[in-house]
Image (cartoon, rainbow, N blue to C red; front, side, top):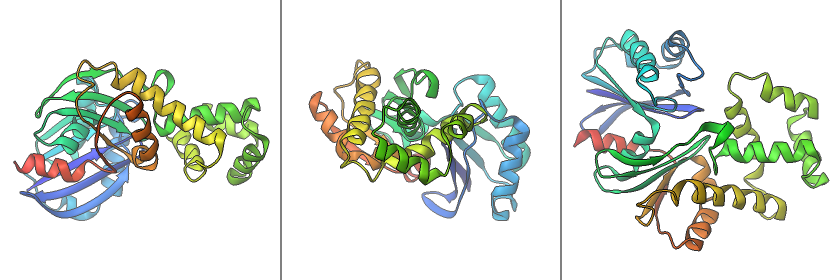
Length: 277
């Protein structure tokens, strides 16, 4: 029996599996070695996972996570998980997790559109080409954090239409100064920006909101998908933002002559299938 975990910046899905059968599920907050130390990760795992995850030694723990891009960052997560589970651990990037979860053993373009964004071409086993995400400061186009950043910036500069801006301030019960502090005095600003962007999801009938969302997703395709030499392959996407704006994603893809294969909220079921095979 194995544990498989798929972690974004905001949440981590955990499953205990035997073959392709899920025995137990759990959700904790997101784990990211760029923002959390080994001790932080251990603390979250031990306190937020149910006791059943620690009652025996598993054959293997497969962890796919945001921020697990370099050997050092993967080692941070690996050492923490080994200490908690006393089990061999393999740590891979969330992008490889998305590719395996979306496509299992088939080739295609795999994309993450959640709190952050990322894109690659997957050959059915490994990533063979990808575009740098660059995170919420320099990249993450199309993501919830990117939309949140665009929207919050417009609000604070007075660009957002006044009725919508006042509705947003009232929704959060925060002043402009407090909103600014909530980003710059925050250890996880991308997550906070993503949460703010949720305000937009049921307002696509507002011209300003639709234009902002469309622009962000268009930037994602131009700066990420079209940069791949295999961009003409079928495209699969995973993440809450992908699901929330699936119609606009289809519209932008059609504009560039691209084909959307599927859009999923989570990678975990595909990862269970991948590791069962």
